[in-house]
Amino acid sequence: MTFDELFAQVTSAEGRFGHRQHVQLTWLAVRCSGMPDAIDLVSEGIQRTARYAGAPQKYHPTVSRAWVELVAHHVVHDGTDDFDAFAARNAPLLDKRLLTRFYRSATLAGSRSRTEWVEPDLAPFPWLT
Image 1 (spheres, rainbow, N blue to C red):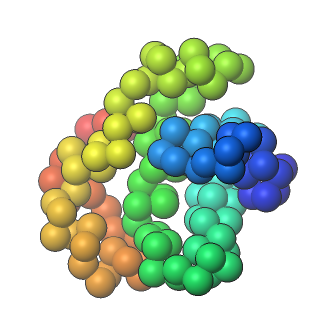
Image 2 (tube, rainbow, N blue to C red):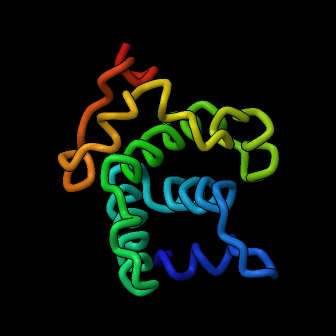
């Protein structure tokens, strides 16, 4: 599936694309393509969408990849085909602030993390411990 197909599938009737829809799109991408390919699919799609919307600064490579890795980790341990069930069992993923468990705010706000992948600096991701 392409990013545009995934985006169309998760966008609500009102055209809303909030955090839950981001997580759902990422869940679909990981399930369809696997984690490494989902990183590229989601990152390139978000970057292109941000440029098209006239807000290229909204794309953040570290944030995009970190979310794909987090969702992928949970997909591996939760084989459901139903996103609502997945979301209910993995509720922390629906918290937009989840990355603050792994990254300092200054790191995510820094220019390096806004231009390239930066590893977590507060706590390692669960699969790295």
